[in-house]
Image (cartoon, rainbow, N blue to C red; front, side, top):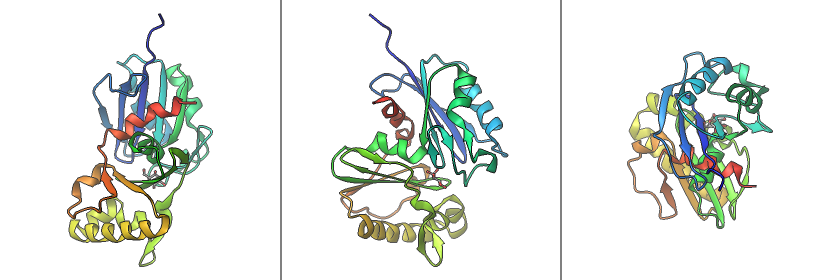
Length: 231
Ligand code: BGC
């Protein structure tokens, strides 16, 4: 009998880089390890951190979530990282570095793949350094939604009003009232069946969420990595 395949799930974030090893069903086989994102987060600096985190782990393949548009393994935007990521071949760089097959996708898309139930219209929003978004119809992803950079209110985007910098600047109370309005607006825009909220700043939410809105745990951002290997 062949050995079970182990997947290294990597989540590159604006403030932390996280990894975890998953079994074929997507269950964790290791702790979730984290190192702060380098202050100057160039591809080289970030890949060095991934190397450090992967160094002591055994795995057969790699799934990586990236905070920007990812197409065919190439990172096309990187608002909260470094301009050197634009046009960078992330998947091939990691194949060379780690010597294993690699699949790469947007971080919110991966979080969504780990969160959704697979029926109807499901929207996923991640509240971290940036504002991530992912949309699914009957479990099928529409990749690279990038709602975060669309206008929300007062001439600002969702990310400018609800990202980490906005939370620090406006404070928890104003951020919560903005988030409540954003949820209303998103429901009008998409008439989703379910909305999932992920990311570290969900712990700052202080209002009662509508019945079709759920908070998903942080680890979902890694667990969804297994879905990239479902063909
Ligand atoms: C990026 C998205 C990403 C989100 C969360 C945004 O600034 O444009 O691609 O999903 O941040 O990391």
